[in-house]
Image 1 (cartoon, helix red, strand yellow):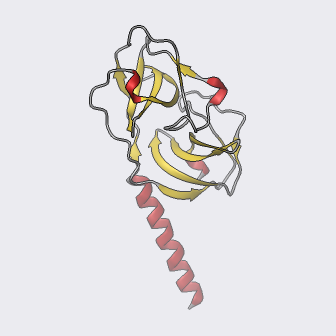
Image 2 (spheres, helix red, strand yellow):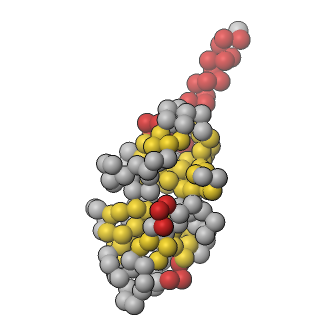
Image 3 (cartoon, one colour):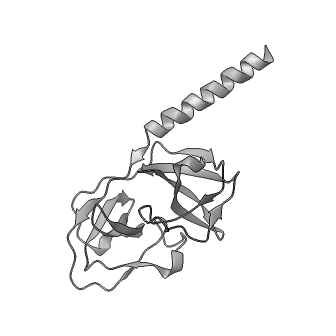
Length: 171
């Protein structure tokens, strides 16, 4: 009887995770028009200056860039176009004029555990975009969204909060 109850519990957990993956917010880039008169802007791995910042990365708003949406007064952006863009991060929303952007509420987020060591990146399109950071097996993350074969998660890097991409297969 205990085995049956255990198996039913495990099955329900697997179903819950599968349903959560299907309902995750898909990240969709929207092309933006370059702005004039901007110096490069700091790119953070989350929606405040308290989030991790990888190698002092910036975004040049005078060049083509994409937006994924707005979280509070921060905007998720990347340099490039909707097919080919670079590192993804957050900048303060008041820095440029933006049309109505989707709200990134991440309402379908859920806690998960890394099942196999996972390289992290903020550039899900770069095949060698992984940083030297690895989330070891057993690391707790919050899964926020999905993009192609990656999951967008919140974790900690060097003791600071960070929102990064990991391979979906790592969970």
